[in-house]
Amino acid sequence: MNKGLIETYYAKENGYHPFFIREHWQVAQLNYLPSLAFTGIERVERHKHTDEIFVLTKGKAVLIGAVVDNKQTDFECILMKQGVTYNIPGNAWHMIAMSEDAEVIIVEKSNTHLNDVTYHYLTDMDRFKLKLQILQLVSD
Image (cartoon, rainbow, N blue to C red):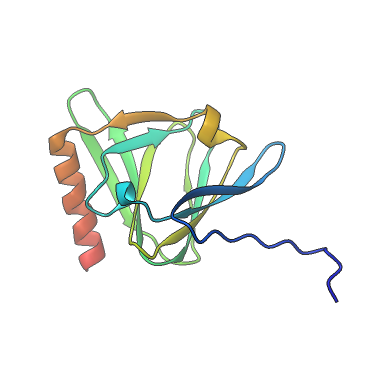
């Protein structure tokens, strides 16, 4: 007996899918994109007006925090565990690297992906350093 009390959401396609948006918050599913490959991260991003919650539900993913300086970028990377909730505080540079089968649930302030995102493109040296850190985490 379906009374319409329970809604379900799931995205099969690659990419970012905000599927539950309410007045002050949203839930999205992020699936693998080539730009999020372990060896393909070219930029980090930040949101000034929201924390961002990440929960890995499938595959492998590395959550990346970054401190951006004029001369270099320092990274803090963690291999995510399925079912664990991770938070990136507002105004912190970050990105996520994913395996091709990875799926991540994201919770943040509504419409962040449209109105509150700034990108910082990494130098060749920063991309190289980050790639080494990520590959070490996923190969252990």
